[in-house]
Length: 57
Image (cartoon, rainbow, N blue to C red; front, side, top):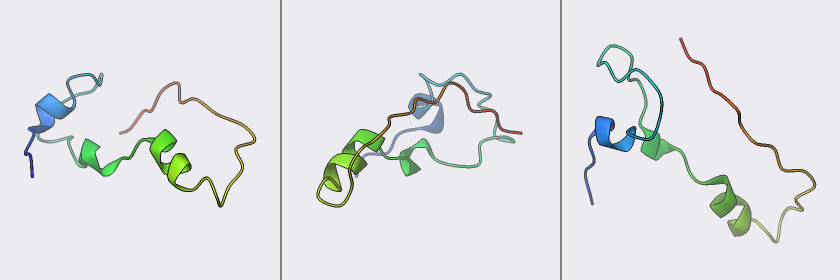
């Protein structure tokens, strides 16, 4: 298994990278396209939404 630092994993994400605010791993999130492709026999895509911003804290 490959180990990636939080700072390296979040390099493309605009966020505070202090030890006091990092509370979850970016690796916990999967690509929604990959998830939907894996479920294509169970679901029908009717609409596709795009996230604009996520604000925490």
